[in-house]
Image (cartoon, rainbow, N blue to C red; front, side, top):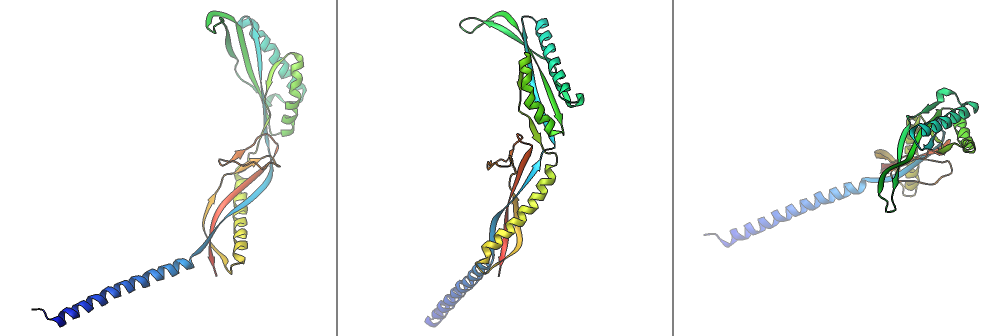
Length: 247
């Protein structure tokens, strides 16, 4: 038979054992909290921009012609395409800069008052593309401006806006990523200066999208931008960087 003293001893032993476990858990938790409190980090965005100049220009246009039959439509198109090619040559555009597409032919059908095809053919429309490309971007800009003079010669011309591209964007991007990362460290230092901390090691870095815009533009897009309308462009890089903060 178990005595009262034995029961009391077991009770107090269990009590102290439970208390020891709780105390140890508190010490462990408190230590973790203290360690985490000492692990201060800061996440900032760094920005870098650069003005670059396009080294490739492209301009294109569509020449269209109509005729009652295929022969007359093609004769008109051929005549007008020759006018375009002569215009380019006289404007100082070398032949090797120029390319043309195959001719596209479309049938012009006759429709009744209800908009239903009658099966009759009213004529044919033909069109052909001409494109000029060069690293002489000013020449591309100038020929695009002058192309409207072809309309006064009776050419059915649908001209497009010239486009300008940069061939070494990879090098520019790598340069700007480095500058943006340094800018992020400077910003982190400004935040830390008033709190008695200093910027430590880089924990992580995430590259954002590149924005390529006209020089004076403030437009941005979440998926990035590549504006081709200007010869000079502004390339903007943003990186998000996390640093360890130390005393």
